[in-house]
Image 1 (spheres, rainbow, N blue to C red):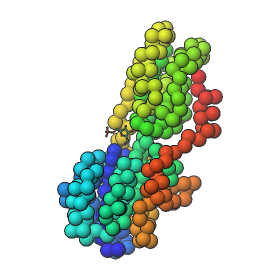
Image 2: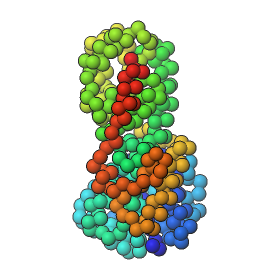
Image 3: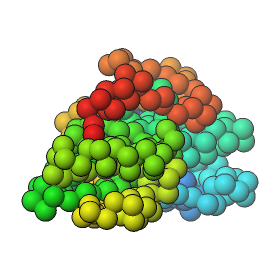
Image 4: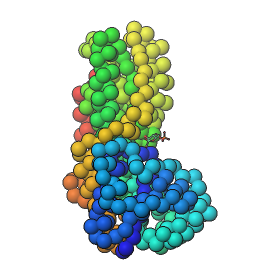
Length: 322
Ligand code: F6P
């Protein structure tokens, strides 16, 4: 293989730059040329290819976001769009592609593989951690640390005013950010899409636990089945008016910021492994790290399954919360 391309796709996540850097430097070490594709699949369609050398990825390991920019491409969902993308990859002599993104990005690569003979290898990049085949996706560790830092601050003011806070965190389909960050901040309850949220049960808990602590923090994943932090808080307010209730939505601060040390190491390992996988003629697989070891998971499998919640963790959450 003489020339590969790398791009980022879907929601950005801290650590993507560390992964790009590892891809570029590993490929150059193995005498390959590297093209960066700007703006994800849209850039592949619109011919936004740029050459990347070792220097072009200097001093990016610590930076959040992605130097290659990203997009959620609608045009790539069409056959027409994919044909343009394929023609551009061919035009630039690309023989292998590394995609850093989440399940939507891998679904796109899988569809593409039916029409395009160029091998794709994926690195899991999403703050949500909602892919099977890796313990941590690129961005997750930084995101949960960002949430912990923000909620610690909310705890200070909540404690001063004896308030009940509902804090909404990202996670459209998965509650893994809420779960881990919730454990980290000692949340009184964690509401996630993977488990049925019983608002009546929550109200009972808040009633009986009223005297336990002066402040209470409830972490709500945005995709929670009871309808998000504002809706749940409204129901609780009506039933328990003696609670001074506030809602905070953390939003996109969770996607930015300098990646943690763990993130930088994991992202570097995955980028490095992705290049080596292409060299071993692997295709349509996602690189992961499970129990500290590099693993390969077929795209088909990674996109169809979501990480199962660890039952021990869930049991512990119930015991340590309210
Ligand atoms: O990247 C995944 C994610 O962070 C989800 O948790 C969230 O629902 C979504 O992105 C929001 O993305 P955007 O605002 O870019 O559409």
